[in-house]
Image 1 (cartoon, rainbow, N blue to C red):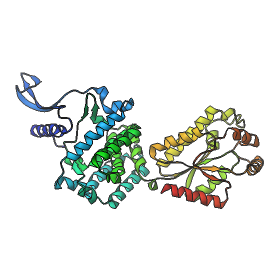
Image 2 (tube, one colour; image 1 turned 135 degrees about the vertical axis):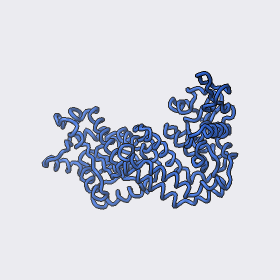
Image 3 (cartoon, rainbow, N blue to C red; image 1 turned 30 degrees about the vertical axis):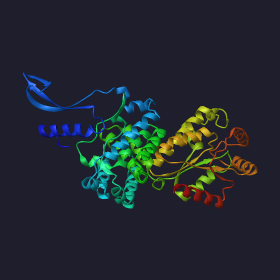
Length: 446
C-alpha cells in the first residue's frame, strides 16, 4: 500500500467507493474532505483540505453476518439470497485479457509463495513445522498438476471482491456486501472460485456446514460453473492460510492456530500422518498388537494404562469401578489420550492409541477433536474368542504388567462394552491380521 500523499489517499478513497458500489450501491455515499480552519477540523468544504474519508451509512452491528453466525441466526433463506447476489455479481464482473493473466499458475504462485515466506517464523508457536511443510507441499503440487488454462478459457478470472467473508457482510433490511480490496489489484483479480472459497471456508470455520453446502449448490445452480469444484478445495486451503497469517501478524495465537488447523484439514490425507485406535476388552491383545504395528508404521504409542498411572496414584487401581477407574478418572484419561494424539499428529507423527474405548462416546469425542485437523481415526477392533482372552489374562497374572485387567474385570467390561461400528475387525494378532490392518489403513489414507 502506498498512501503517502493526500492525492493518493483521495484516489484510493474514490476507488473504494467506486468498487464497492458494485455490491452495495446505496451504502457508500461518496468521498468527503476533512478540512482545517480556525484551529479546528471538520467534515466540510470550508477550509484547507487535510485528509479525505469515505462516507457510508451506518449498519447495525448485531446484523453483521459474523455475529449472526456466532449466534446461529443465519438462515438457509439468507444463504440463498446471498448466493444469488454473489453469483450475479460474478457473472457481470469485468473480465479481460489483463485480468485473466492473474489466473495463470505463475501469478497464483506469487500469492501462495508470499504466504509461506511471510509465515516461516510462525512455525512452532502458530503452526507446526509439519503443518507448514504439508500445506506448502499440497499447494505447490496442486499448482503444478492442475490445468489452470481451463479456468481462464472459461472466463472465470474476473474483477472480484477479494475479501468476501462474513465480517464484510451485513444481513439487515437487505444484504449488504462491502469493503472489497481496493488497494491491490492482485488480491482482487482472481478466479471467482477464490472469492467463493473464502466465504465457504468462513462458514465452515463457524461450523455452518449445511449453510456452506447450500451456498455452493445455489451458486453453481445459478452460474453453471461446474468446474469450480475442481479448484475449490485448493482455494479453501489458500484462504484459511491467509486468515491464519493475518492472525499471526496480529499475534492472536489461538485464532491463528484455528485457521492454520483448518487449512491443514482441507489438504489431502496423503500429506498427513496415520492414527490407529485400538478397541477391545482387556486381554484381547491390544498392547501386543500395538507394538507390532508401531514397528511397521514407525508410530508413537499412547496407552491408557500408562497414562492413568502417570496422572493418578495407583491406590485401589485394581477396582474396575473405583479408585482410579471411576467414570471421572476415566474421562480424564481419554481426554489426555486424545490431546496427546492431536498434538503428535500435528507434529507429523504416526500415532497408535492403546485403550479399551469401551463406550461409543469416548470414540466420538476423539473423532470430534481430530476433525479440527481432518484426520480420521482408523479404529481396529480386536475380537478374539473368549478362550484366548482368558488364557491371556491367566498368563498376565503370572507376569509383571502395568495393566490391571483381570478375568473379573473382563466380565464386567463385557457387560457394558459397546462394539464399534465401521471398525477394522480382527480375531487374532498373527502376522496375517497385521498385514490385513496395514492394507486397510493405507487404502483409507489414499
